[in-house]
Image 1 (cartoon, rainbow, N blue to C red):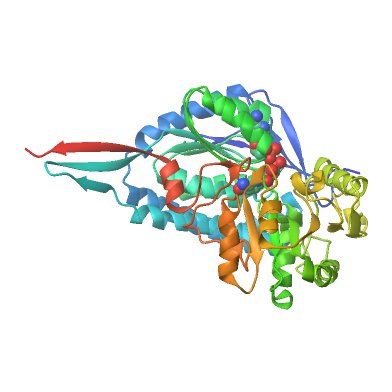
Image 2 (image 1 turned 90 degrees about the vertical axis):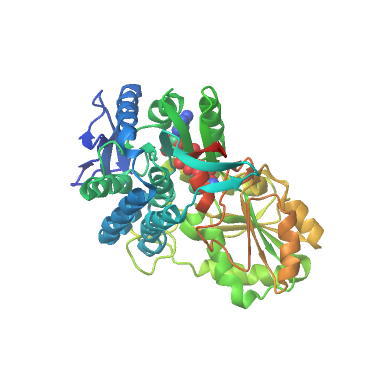
Length: 487
Ligand code: NAD
């Protein structure tokens, strides 16, 4: 059941420093995933709103692009300071809007949103132009802004991912239009309030709400947009790549994953079990990096399975506002239906559900929410659909392997290539396996341990390009070479 609540909030577009409805005056309702209650409504923007925003961003770029990198870095620090003052509000809104536990939205979402601005302020200050001296000439390689950019983000880590793009993009002198997921608009709105309050020149950061087809697609196709940074699903990424290609825009695509967690026979299960469970189910498994296929070496399969299922059964699913909650709800009824359909498919494909995959009993207040208990499945072929397609929810499959070569083969047996993790006492053995994995990132004896200076991104259907550290600064700028002949 989906109901209303008393405090319906209008979440506006932000264009050129103004809070605006869509030109057509149409709205999209936004629901709290844990209860099904309506919490806000967002403008159903279309091409007219897009044209307006791009025009404003282009005009703002004329002044903004002229500032020095240190002046722009100072702005990023000011935004970080203002965001930090609203830390608790970010955490509460993110928890309300996504259904994730408040503990997670505080530790992961709010923390990283502030850190992203601070981190890029420092990176940009430290950035130096490169010089190459020849016998009779000197080359200066300089970085210029690219122009107007579009930043499109998904619903699973709303402000975390948006700030990861906004900070380096404006820090390198570009102006941007953000297009957050229509399912999670709340913290993007908060960020725009913070940016306005910080006094950043109007039009440097703009924000358009709406659906992917009506607001996202015209942004990507707009002739005055010079780059698109997209994080979302692989099939959408393919449409974005196609639409951007027509006018040779720079694109960065961070897409889906089907990551393997490889448990070698020498893994210290006692020590690492909590981390392996976290890698499987953080944010209800709705993290692109989550390990949804666990590959376990034969000799420790049963011991791992028993300990893992026991640990999963201890996870506390329920009220996202409760500090002790480990797992909240899924994002939408449609997504719940998708994840549930994979539970049924796992049975059809010959798997055994060891635990979960059911509607948990939480309380009447949450009856209208999108709930499913974390599921563990064994007995499936590693070539089954459940073991190769991205489910993006709380369902993991267990598979046996006999030796390291087989672990690599199974790990690489999907169209995706985002990340993976290996658990072993022998880090050399782990690294040898890691080097053979077709992924952009591998963790050994840890997961989601992020140094923001390192490259982030995937191979195969998991994306194109890298973000993070100097890779982001490279993407969000154009390099030009000036060659000066000695006189
Ligand atoms: P999605 O692809 O449905 O939507 C992502 C964004 O794209 C939304 O803002 C949506 O409105 C917009 N969009 C949709 N169609 C569009 C179009 N034609 N043109 C332009 N924009 C369009 O993804 P989602 O369901 O919001 O997010 C889940 C997916 O995101 C999963 O596949 C997950 O793996 C992936 N993801 C990847 C990363 C990563 O870093 N690789 C991080 C988080 C999530």
